[in-house]
Length: 359
Image (cartoon, rainbow, N blue to C red; front, top):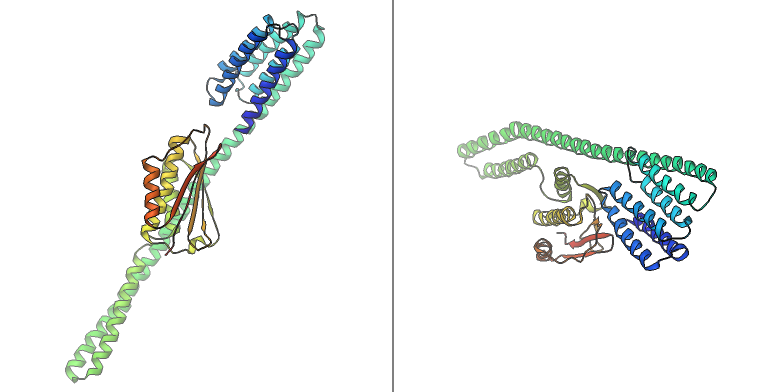
């Protein structure tokens, strides 16, 4: 967005210089300038670029034919528009667009009796320069698209690898639990039965105490087996897993930053669900209202050891926002856990941050 404003600023400066230095009808020139300025704004939509650039060139050329006495700034403005187009238009459109613009530029200078040979040489030089800039720009864009594609594939493979490792760990835990149940559990059960029989035969209370100890050991073994067979469903790691799953399903590029010590913070299932719902709502807002496909999530520990989170995404058309149902519900759910949530936006970013108390 900053690059757009820099280009727009240069575009306006050249127009102002053109009006001040060469215009014979300043009011009409200002009308042409405002029309061109409106057309330039539409370039940020990245749609119908050839039509928009053709319209801008047409405004400048018509203005140069009828409203100026010297064509120098008109030609400079045309060259600037062509340079701008080199970064946006595709190769198949750009050569014809450049040829038409250069032809009109040469004609504007020719009718003012400028040296034709020098004009043609300079025009050819600018033609190849702009084509080289366009080629470089397209190559950089293709490389960025390839990088984004590779990054997405890397994330998918990483998630697949994590899922495979998790399944392997769960399988190993299940195997260990089965072995404990089949060996230790059965032997403890047999021991309890023998102690019970001895207690009946001997009538001694010592056997009852031994039987009680064996029963406690059997209960502890069963709890251990149950814990091994059950995958953990609480904590930050589970929240991260759910967000990665949501990222894959919604085609959002999520950049996670996890501060030191955050994975060791204890978090109940209820608080894990609230944290996940907050992040989920923030991602939904980013897609629906900001049109952003890239979100940065930061999880860390506050000074008091609580969970601190921040979700931010870029916005391309900043508008005043209000707390709708989703944001209001999100805020109330966090406050029910004695946490805090704040939502605000700058000219470039929409930010949701807050704190959820740990156990």
